[in-house]
Every structure is written in structure tokens, then in C-alpha cells.
Image (cartoon, rainbow, N blue to C red; front, side, top):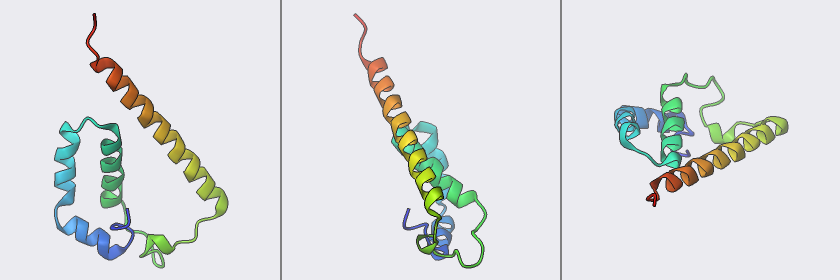
Length: 96
């Protein structure tokens, strides 16, 4: 995430063809956490560039209520990923 926090970092990742690599990885990767990370990075790469004053996203002031909501959503996503991993492990066990 820190590599894409700055405009220069986002441009460097785009210029190196990372999107094509991620697209291929997404086709065969089965690990939910890796898929989630790929999807978030793709959103950064294909999304509109933030406006003036937001070149470095690590320096953007986020209102406390928005930050709390984002943290809540992160926890929900982590829980969902954990359940997906548990389901996958459960379906991989041989039946008797």
C-alpha cells in the first residue's frame, strides 16, 4: 500500500505493466487474502488519480468518523476472508 500512496509510486507501478501481471494472477490464485490484495491494487491502478493536494495519500487528513467506518469495513472484510479460508479448508478434507 505504501508504494501506491504517492503519485510517483502509482505511476511507477502502472508503467511496469503491473496490471497485466495482476490480471493473470487473479485468474489462478485461490487464496482469498491474496485475491483481496490484488483487487485492491487493481482498483488503485485503474481508478482516477486523486485531486490536487492528495498526491501523497499517507498525508491526507481523514475525518475520524470516516476512519472509524473504514476500520469497521476492514474488520468485516478480514472476517469474511477468514470464513472463506475455513470453508475452503473444510471442503478440501476427504470425505469418508
